[in-house]
Length: 133
Image (cartoon, rainbow, N blue to C red; front, top):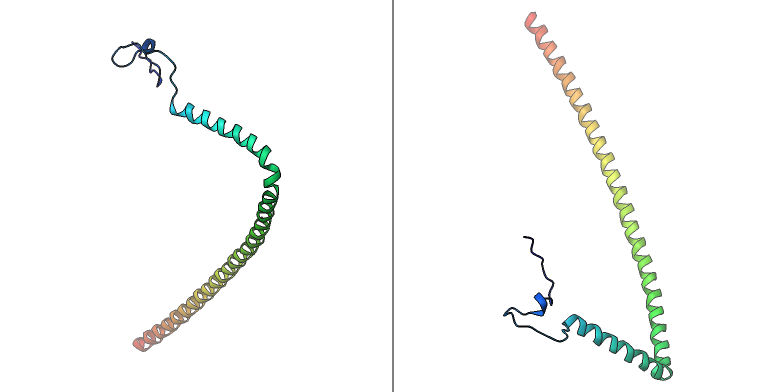
């Protein structure tokens, strides 16, 4: 009742869709690329041995420039990192200053409202005294 899923390249007794028997070796693209990569790797190893004496000065020059680039990159990274840290610190300072200003403004508003409330109460008391008299 259970059907087995057959992997790509495997058929029932090496039969294709038409039921014909297929024989021989089957090499898929992945295997071909793997073999080609291995062959290129072997050629590269052989070529490096022959060209190492001729290419050594160029390889040294390229490596030297790579090291110089790495040092330049690290120096610029540190500079940018410091700039970003300065910006973040300044933003935090401005934010805290804004919060303090906002708190002071809110306190002044509350004090003003209390004064207005007291003035209204005094005015109401005076009005009620006038009405009683």
